[in-house]
Length: 337
Image 1 (spheres, rainbow, N blue to C red):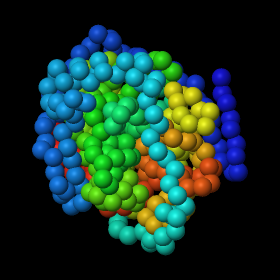
Image 2 (tube, one colour):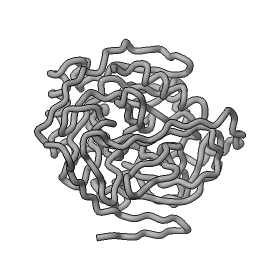
Image 3 (cartoon, rainbow, N blue to C red):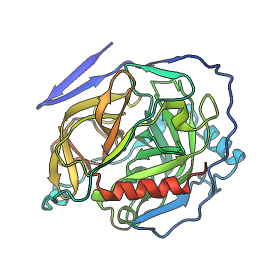
Image 4 (cartoon, one colour):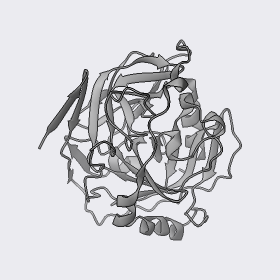
């Protein structure tokens, strides 16, 4: 079943998901290290990190803690997770546009190594669940290619509450989630990183985060080896063609089906890009992909869903400049081999 929604020039389509497994047994396990413990950082070149934790404060540094996070996420807790905020007042979006700066750069996408292939979907994209004060929350996220193949990119507000708040716990990534199904399995974060400007000031220009994942999923392997990883682009300008993927929850969306929007971005305000897209809360952290290939489900991550203002048919994401490259290098440096 395919469902189209069209509002004021935006395009959105519900994609029925299916996953096939080829050339490898589901019983295959790959030995791998737990993500290395990194001490909380006050900020390195504008970046900040923490060891991921369970909701009772235990560091996710061993297999027992990983198992505890996986066990925490029962179907009932997932169903009760609130969609994290996406709308901000229009008064926050009146800053003058900023000119792109810096040299354009790219990291190439990577196909999965372990026999997974996608039909009409991107299994690099999935749902994030976190424990938040007083309950549970949900966002979207996607696997991001790197040399160590452990990174997942999302929005800053999906890992940390911003100014006056703290880090969220029980961070889990479920790629390719479709309704009650988890065809690829689960991945638990070992470390979380974001921008200092997000945690100190809730600066939407810096609403970006990268999680470092432990081995997991159906192969007990690295996330990029399992599902593939999108590439990364920075300093490519404010006007680019993108496919935006995510799991909207509010406003009548089901929350467990992946949707997409397609169009050309522009500079809405400050160092942010804007696009026509009527996805709602829950899509936060979903990737904005250049050169998205519907055959292999891969593209180049050029922003993530951050927020929208008063127009429900538009959304904003942070402009990817040298800051995202700095965060990417920082997260990769914290990753174990």
